[in-house]
Amino acid sequence: MKPRIKATRQRNPELAITVSETPNVDGRSVLLPERYPTPDLFICDVLDAIPKDDMASMEHPIFSLATKPDRRIFRYEHNGNTVEIVPSVKGLATIHDKDILIYCISQLIAKMNQGERPNRTLHLTARDLLVWTNRQTDGDGYKRLRSAFERLAGTRITTNIKADGEEITEGFGLINEWRIIRKTNSGQMSEIKVTLSEWLFRMIEGRSVLTLHRDYFRLRKPLERRIYELARKHCGAQEKWVVSIEILQKKTGASSHIRVFRSMLRDLAINNHLPDYAVEINSNTVTFRNRETMDTVKVIEPKLQKPFVDPEGFHDARGVAPGYDVYALYDEWASWWNDSGQPELQNPSAAFVGFCRNRHKRNPIR
Image (cartoon, rainbow, N blue to C red; front, side, top):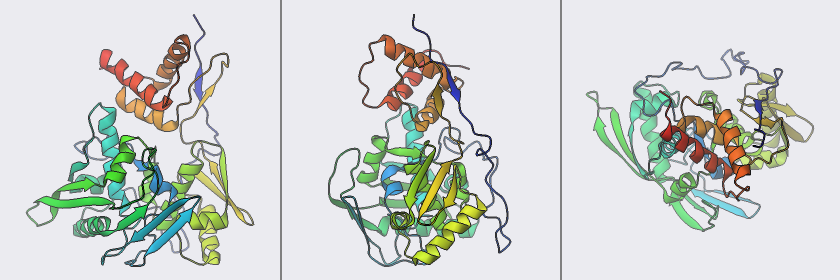
């Protein structure tokens, strides 16, 4: 019998730090407060729904960074990908409006991990959504939520960005429709029905998503959220990602002058509060260094080949095999793959998650 692969989590104690709570120049914490440190257990799939974001909107500037109604027509082109975004009278959908889509994506991926078939139409509880995304649950919170739905439904996108490997130039809204089904006694929305666009739904079905740090919802500034998305997409679990300031500004979609953009980057580096990544500013480049707060796997015994499973694969494996040590399951799966003649895997991470799901079905840990 072949030796098993021994896997260990790699941590750098100098980088694996707690995100700074140091106040900025105006005396506020650089992060929003964690409003629900112990979320209500009745929230739908709260233990399984790890924050997930679609990779297309992480890569390309689809959401406005403005804090006031943004009614400009925005056009973006990079490496053959084109995007044109047209607002409604309510303005473009903002990066904070995107919280709704992240919530929907996360719920659907969690259900897929449990073996359920995803559906484009979701029934949401408004309070659950607000709590899960670290938003206030007062009257203003519900009012902002309604405005976000209106902007998401009204914003129209024309793009040739691939969805699940298929390139089609098409126009669509971020959500097809939404409806308040039930209200509370005070007249606030309680239950909401929302139908996602087919484009976004294809992303979810193809698992073209990445996991976000939960402190993403505590980032105050729109630009900080956008920069975190880009770092998460391009750096991932690598040691670092280096990008020119000019390209970074283009990818964020920021309309500010380059001097203002540099100043905001310096503040981000000084406060050192971006989840998962530390930021360094050089003369014309920005370096994102992995704090190694994400799980990585290093092979100690190199004699066996091993399929690469990304950090999202390990997150998803925990969801489908609760109680199991997913790294031990990874060892077993990799050994089985080698013993089977190393068959070609189109998606190693999905294959590993399926292995873990089947193991839990056969022998659930109580």
